[in-house]
Structure formats: C-alpha cells, structure tokens
Length: 156
Image (cartoon, rainbow, N blue to C red; front, side, top):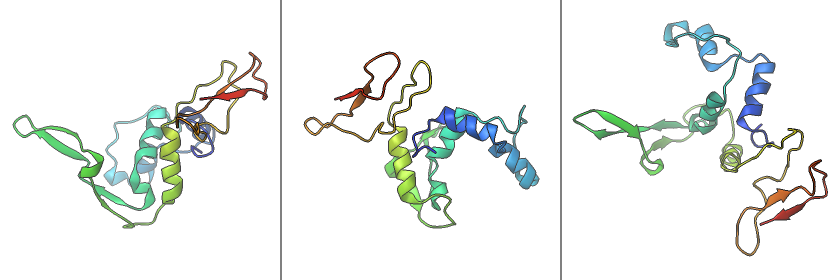
C-alpha cells in the first residue's frame, strides 16, 4: 500500500476497517506461550506507529538482522540503536513476505513528505517520483486553485 501512495494513517485505517488483528493480538491468538503484551483495548485498532515499525523491518524480506542495539556506556548499561553499517544481516534465512525491490521502493517513498490537502480528497500519484533535471531537487505539485483542479503545474 505504501508503494501505491498510501500513508501510514491511510494504511492503519484500512487495516482497522478490514478487521485485521494487530500484531499483539495475533501473537496472543497463535502463540499464547510467547505472548508478552500487556493488553490492548481493541484487537483491530491499528496505529501509525505500528505501521511505521513494520515498514522498517528488513525481516519481512526474509533476512535475519542481528546487532540492532549497541551498548553506549558499559558502566550504566545504556543501549542505543546501531548504525546501519554495523548491523549483521543474514540474507534469505526464511520465507520472504515482500520482495526486496518492493521493500526498497517503500523505503524510498516513505522518506517523501506528503501533505494532505485540506478537503482530503486529492492524492498525487507522482509524489516522490519526479526530480528536477537541472538541480536534482524533488518536484512538488502546485494546484492552480482551492478546488484542486487536475491542471496544476510542477515546480522544483
């Protein structure tokens, strides 16, 4: 859905409307012995944070990722997030849910800033795909009026 231009909020609303179990509820149902969740109000209520977390995980491509955290201070045992180059990634250790090309496209599109129009009806399919040939900056869509007619123009 991210590759199709939907944002985290849109994906969360769609999964909630389709009554898809959140990960904690799914774990409680299928692996109760390994479930350590502290409860949830609605097992079908998806959040933007959950969607964001799922979109970041390389494990969905079939890879095993180790060393995600590092000890910043061994005396206080404070831990922090490891840099991407410090991760140990073992490729194709299990069945992939998503192919690598689609995952990379989703990561690229996730970095693109999307602004929802006031009336919430207009969605530009080319967001994050067009760049200026001269300077390389992202092109943005400017609607000619408040009604957001489709004959706008692109600016760099």
